[in-house]
Amino acid sequence: MLPARVLRLLDLVIGLLGLMLVVQVIAFPAPGVRARALGAISTAAFLLGWVLWRTRGQRWALGLLCAGTVLNVQIHGGSGLGSILLLVGVSLVSLGYGSRIALAVVAAIVATMALTAPDMAGRSSAMAVADVAGAAIILLLGVLLGQALGELSRERRCNAELLDEVRRAAITEQELMLADERARSARELHDGLGHQLTLVVLSLEFAEKVRQRDADRAFEEVLVAKQTASDALAHMRRWVRALNPPREEAVSGNAAFEALARSFRGTGLDVEVTHTGQEGELDRAGSLFALRMVQEGLTNVVRHSNATRVGLLLDWRPDRLRLVLSDNGGGPADLNPGFGLRSLAERAAELGGSFEARPGPDGVEIVGEIPREAVR
Image 1 (cartoon, one colour):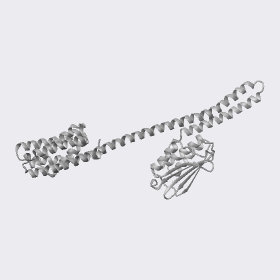
Image 2: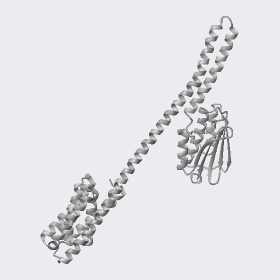
Image 3: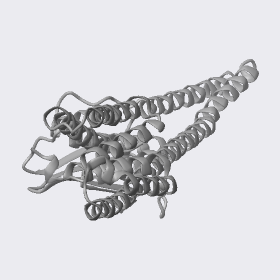
Image 4: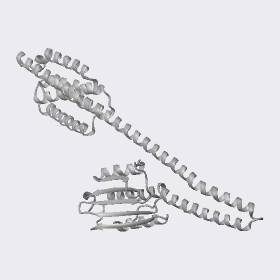
């Protein structure tokens, strides 16, 4: 199917041509009752063919439209209106049936016009030949126009299929990355929390065995189990906070980042927020990106780092806001960003900014910038 804008343009063109045909039939009728009747029939066929094709998508309706066009030109001669009708009619036949059938239709129209033009319009042979030659050229142009419209329709359909394929691939990649993140989280929970709980059980079992002959040693093991259980509880709280981060705060500006930092201090992290420059307000898109960037960075520190301190710098510049989040957890020399960080990079590019995750002086450092357009 053609693009909506092209179809609306064709609707307008066909509507104007149909109106002009109706005016021609009423105000400038062809001489003779037979010619008048054929003029009315040709106009009705032209309009009916277009309506049927647009509403029901039936290709044969384009043939009806073309037949009405040719008959009208035969009756009224090769006027300017007739030339436009031939061009539109044959181009639509070429669009609906292909160039081969359109060329066959052109040959049949030219042959019919050559045989009947003098009789139908009462013109001389020289004028009839000129009309037929001009009509042939217009018809060939109509075939080329129909091919162009068909190519446009095929290209649009191909682009839509490619877009759907890209969307499906993106969804599949997202699902795979999320599944990998879930598997990684499950392994870390099993290896970390599971090990701590196992130590608690072993300590309590040992205390139970030695409580009769060595009560002091049993009590020491109970204290060890208590400390291990406390560590496991703190570990679990950190994971709960990481897996269910706080939602966007209702406040904005530096206060929003302060509130976000406070929520992560409950995990045991020392989050320090500093800001420089003149504080400004962000629109919803920019504010959401900035908060999500800080939230994702803090979440990754909680889940994947041994950091104890995180620094957040808010650098309010005249042309942009720059955010730098750094930790002291060491970290690998080569970072392999996960789905969250990659999504932030894509979102930053959409906003006209930038995002980067890189090794820092003591750990990992992520840097994001929002351009001035995002700042009111």
